[in-house]
Length: 431
Image (spheres, rainbow, N blue to C red):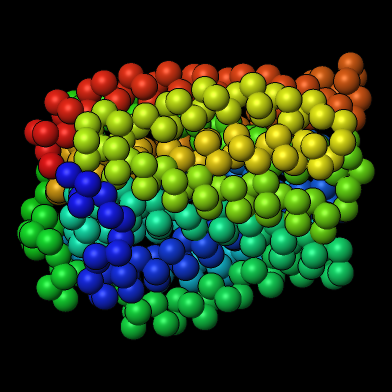
């Protein structure tokens, strides 16, 4: 069984090229999405925003449209006649262009409309990418492959912190947004040459949906996805994990600026290590552990996410309470690794818990929960709570919110554990 968990080393060249290309696309995806985190404080000052408005821009303005449009776009991606490479290219043009337009915003509503555009564009990326990966990578290496793609989350966030922090201190936040939006437009021109549609190039592993327009209705497709109890438990776990991750991701950076008196450049560099590099390692570790130990017992695909999030909670609490910036950074490092380990295992399970014709829909429903609940509500609720606590806590209001958020990590840990108990039975019926 150990041979099944040797990661991505034995994949053929076309598959490796596809994975690397999708990784770069996802890096741009999260770079454009998350750069607002490091720019939050200067945008707030320049546009005269409250923490609640800032949370709305980082969360619902993007996430509602991203989540709602994700399901019909994913259904289109599941059609055997759809060219998913073209779909991702068009999506990349939209979200990159709208990111650049964010730099021209003069008030809250203009920024909100541009953020909505970013969400509309990005809705076409991940369900299509997961579907491509599942069509070309064998199930025993799927967690590692999806985790490899998922490294775009921390890498993109890392680059957003560094580029956004440095460019903001030199030229301002508007220049930072325009600068990160432009390269995506160039990449979109190259993408059709780099990313082939496996349905047309003969690269599938015999699991792709057959070509043709016939599909069951969207409502029936979603209803079938929800017949898997393991999937429902994973959806709850991943959605709550995203709620905490997006909320803490934005306001941890504000904590370093407000409570530790740091500049955006300094926070960008520190955040790139504590949130970026640690996130990359944690995402890779989760995929590796899932393939390695899941080959022995499938329930262990989710063991690291369950145990890791429980262990991370008290350490993260101590990190938020530290009065010295470098102590806080070190204490946040380990929880970031552990909290990032769920991406590959969770989405690999999703692809194995449904019929091959429903893979993109299953991924999009998971993304719907993660983005509507996680990205949509996390930054917003954290910001609203910070405003509510400010009369009592002053500049430490963000710290108080983060204290509570640290302990809530036990909730997704519990649901990942419950989902793991059903994997042996349910994955056997679909893989």
